[in-house]
Amino acid sequence: MDLGMLADATFSQSHRYMGLDWSMVTIVGLIGNAIFSSRFIVQWIASERQGASVIPVSFWYLSLIGSVTMAAYFVVRRDPVGILAYLPNSIVYLRNLQLIRSGGVSS
Image (cartoon, rainbow, N blue to C red; front, side):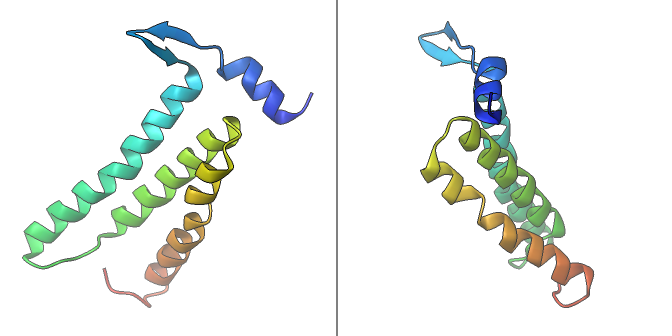
């Protein structure tokens, strides 16, 4: 049994509620989407406080965590479009965090 089949058997059992199919995979996808989306609220609040457009370090962490979570969701769903939409971005987010840590980028 490959990893995808094991994930399907464990997490993909869906239940219909309010006319929608719900599973643990769906919940993970919703959480990932919420994390990924929250980065814009964090950036907006930081910019309002500074009175200028800024990107706080937490923006990059939320981007990375949300992107990896969404990529995992799409891996389990076997959706190459979603995987390619989220996974490669993680490299950019990691690099930005690395630059911030080394003092190469102001935040």
